[in-house]
Amino acid sequence: MSRRPIIAGNWKMHNNRKASAELVCGIKEAIEGIDKDALPEVVVAPVFTSLDVVSQNICNCGCGRIQLAAQNCYFEEKGAFTGEVSIDMIKDFDAKFIIIGHSERRQIFGESDEMINKKAKAIIASGLTPIICCGETLEQRELGVTDSHIASQIVKALEGVAPADVANVVIAYEPIWAIGTGKTCDSAEANRVIKGIRTTLSQIAGKENADKVRILYGGSVKPETIKEQMAQSDIDGALVGGASLKVDSFVEIIKGAM
Image (cartoon, rainbow, N blue to C red; front, side):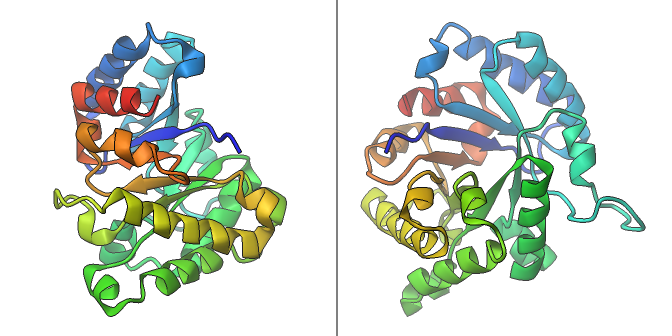
């Protein structure tokens, strides 16, 4: 099955409004001469305070070459939830995607599988697309529980989601030991784990729906690794961290996915 690749840049807690505008404009200018049909789906996820200025610059290009994502959300529509941002507020900026379940949210902020499931269902109900992150620690990998741990994360994240809706989610496999460390999971091994994720999705939603799900690799993705990763059977793109903060490296990764 042909699945359109996604190259998504997670800017994490970097860039004020000015720097965010400069970065997205640089990306926009670098890809504007490329045939739109040849491009992967390009996504950028700035901090909440830059969603507006990035959205404005994306809209100004008028070509649909870049999509907007938020890095997180809360599952309630509104209320006494100090410091949180609702999905409806994110929709104000014409975002298409919301990243949830990132290991930093799980490990640093204590987000549970139950909370991630609530977010996934709320995002789907809103008409946006969740990018659901999963991955194992180095300790879990060394214990040999990578596959069972990730399968559990996927099952719990999608509990109660209709099979047809599962087909439209995006999954990002990010081995935690490779995030921001400079270490990259071997492409064949990453593909093996991602195949396992697709098998789990088949068990949840049926093979036809599972085959439609785009599954990304994340974890120190670099321009020099992307071609080999994209040559694998089940890797449908990348969730890029540090390399998405520089125009040149991010654009090289985009081109490497074509």
